[in-house]
Image (cartoon, rainbow, N blue to C red; front, top):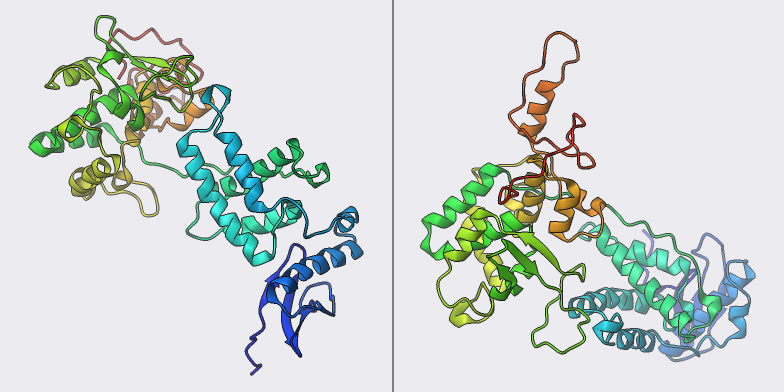
Length: 429
């Protein structure tokens, strides 16, 4: 049985090397690579200095094998913009005013999270400067980042952030233009999600109605299911946004306004929009007690609602108790996976089944394209069965009339090709 390896293995930009000491001096062994590289002295007694020399050796060998640009050897590999300094410049640029395209706090938080993973990867591979970042080690980073627990979309955003920062630094002339490269990143498809059925939605309302401690959750579920609003938009909704006279709810985006507004709000699309008030929404809003000022939905003592607490309450006291009543297929999203955002999928799907034109639903949801709206449409099984019963393939007699009168929409028309009539007011939900 071979002896257990004790010398550290270092993955550099191009090759793997085994570091070992001989009489106190560090050496590098590259014979474990597909291309046999031999053994070389690094001429250093200090570990960190040896690692820096190893990176230079790695680049030198890559140039000799035609794998790297020789111009990179003419630059001192220990000089250049460090990873931390470059990322700080990038983040500082993101702090500019919103009117000039500054990023939101949530975006900054996500960027820092993704950056933390690249930093960990860079420390294991000897990458210290931005001119060391290239197509090969970004591909290796994607492989390193991909684990069974990591969503492919997360890997996509992590790699994309590093490429975004590098391109920014090149535009700002902080990094040489010779470091620019093309990277073909294909965005993975989103994970499948569950969409509430009408029976499940009614069960949620019934559950909230029976428990007096869930009265606010019932109101929130009703408004979300009949407007398609995001939960963050609902929390920011103010009584001044509700126009009962004209039957519309104004979902405001105050991004980039010319005058300063305290507690300014923004939407994901950075655009304001209007959603008609459904009759069920009107009843829900009118049932809210207290002064009709400030935010519509408030937490304890009139403060803000804590999203994490409300989500935990919704899952523990509504979703989990009803999960056994609505079992799903193994390995597929089911009712047990339902959350507040699932109401947005429910709203979009019900609108399509009721014959609301796609472009109208797109406006209500605030999507920039119909392609995004289609991601929220889930074909109801009973609607699908009813439409199949109408298909007359044998040519004998007429097919039965489906129970659904609206049908699924294709380009604003029903499946039979007839244009849809405009829905009556208050029947959109």
